Amino acid sequence: MDAQTLTGYIRQGIRKEVYDDRIELYLPFYFESGEGQPLCLIWNRNGVLSDGGRTFAELKKRVGDLSAYQRSIQNILRTNGMVTLEGGQKLVVRHFQTCISGSETYLDYLGGLSRLLRVIARISVVDTIVVDEDGTVRLC
Image 1 (cartoon, rainbow, N blue to C red):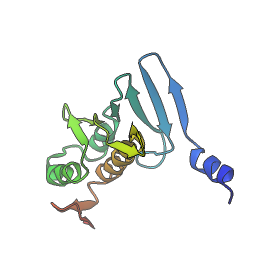
Image 2: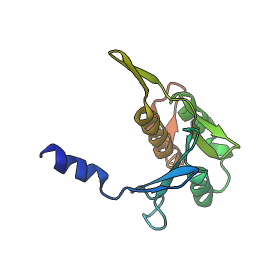
Image 3: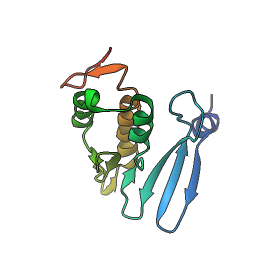
Image 4: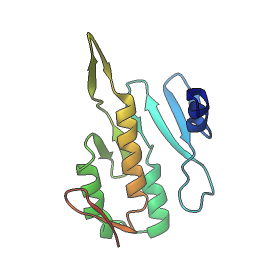
């Protein structure tokens, strides 16, 4: 597979909408049975990335009370670095690692995106897994 074909494959199903105050990135990630709206990640003008509270809203729809899963959720957050929980619902990445390449420095937004997606994927199925303090994931 050549690079252009691979890039097309990776980008299929991804949609971007640009507004004055934010960028919305729609990914082909669906909660539950694949019905409904795809996951939307939001970058605001300050470079803050979030799920807008969608992960917890979808999980609450499915399981109701989240108290039984709080320990696993905290372990997921603690072992994935820069992803935080704001207002008890919104997953956020505020700070990105600075990368150095020769004499240039840049913020690693893709690393932050990757961490956020890993957290979303795990929290969205937290009722079917157990996450130990060291981040080890086991099926219930």
